[in-house]
Length: 102
Image 1 (cartoon, rainbow, N blue to C red):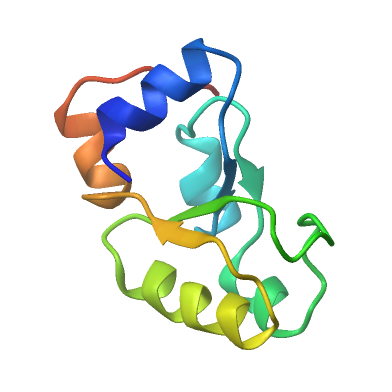
Image 2 (cartoon, one colour):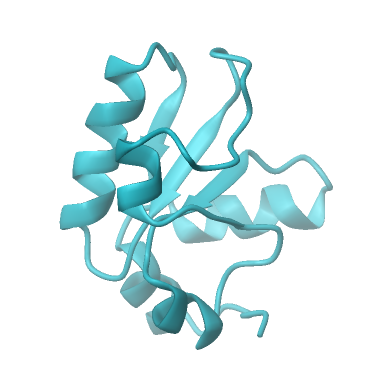
């Protein structure tokens, strides 16, 4: 999903579940409004608090992409059917100057 599309959906109060798989330290340095902090290792071991509905729309992000790609694959393996990546990840979000929560 493109960052501008995600921002539009957030403003329209119709966002997907944003799954931020970065570390605690990365997350606390700025995250997208409403994002669920679910570090990659928590997804791997099924400790993350993400929707149990397998048809929930999920957008996965990390700082640059590799962790998000791995987590997307894991979520699909776990049965989630509507998983996408944030285009450009958090680096791209910042590049557009989009708002962050702290």
